[in-house]
Image 1 (cartoon, rainbow, N blue to C red):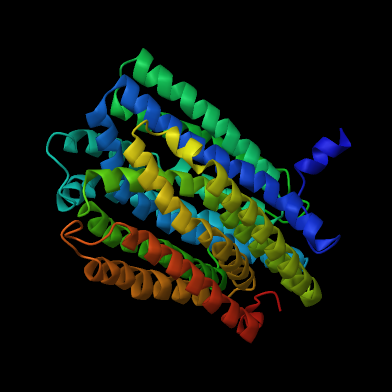
Image 2 (image 1 turned 90 degrees about the horizontal axis):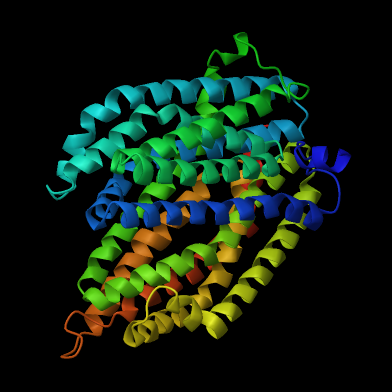
Length: 460
């Protein structure tokens, strides 16, 4: 029973062997990321099977608007995780309490604004995105329900960020699994059973996220031996609010810029024709699973670094950085080998068309070694974020996505135009991605070695 309780307890990452502590913290997050991927896949399957292709298109067309919403809360969540981890590592219960109180209040206010404004701007936004008239009403219904249920979405993301900052990645995993199972059950009930259509899908997700948010609240209320949670501390603290925005805004902007670059490259991909578009969808789905360990280790290094910098254990930060990066590179190497050996079988899950399988496998071979480079980038970026330097990873992301990947993709496409490939060879977009990942790892390593990130600690 003691071991079960320990799983749900906050973990002090300032003690113990660094690689073991990082692994213990990373595994629940990795499982959570896998669950999230299946969560999204299940939604798509249910919508497509029980409602139809137009409904699937409606949900897909709503994603750009939802991604803007996600960027906002991802930024706050990252900032919250960094501040909480540093103050927890420093054993500064007073600052930990005011930080958590400020996070909760800002999340409440932001959610309230979205609830009020979101439904009013939904239709104009969809028209701006040239949403087809045949699906715009479904899109609007889907988004309106999401906006009205913003509290659950917002608090779930922010509270799991706080829990991870405290070293508790296991509770976040359990609540995500509960949300995933509940969402699938409600999806089937609302859509197949009650015939609610697209609004039923949105309602199911909002309810599932709301339940998970409540579980996170109950969990935090049980952790008041670490911090105080009172009405007085819920009053926004100016210093903490500014620090939260300063730390979280770059991460949110990074996600927004990355999404914009993807849209720009997608335009080029569309010019290559339907076969290449289908190939891109398949490769990106495989890529989503292949990238999960890298993102997981990056998040783990943020919390590990934050706690140890708060505890003034820079020696552990340096040792943990080496250990964490080695583990991430090892996992990515295994994934690369698996993709090269079993890639055709993975791609075969999505299609039976031999030509499409061959094309997709060719593109996966181009990308495969890039996952190793991304392991380095994510780990070192996670260390810098954990230290409080979120600007450097942001600028590096801007350089490699906007100033490297997009021009390289279009440049290669232009240079490889021929009678057979009038708009250029389709490999252009994937080569540009590999080059940007590799250069990103080099640039990130250089900035990490310069060591300026060491001076950004909040817990002084």
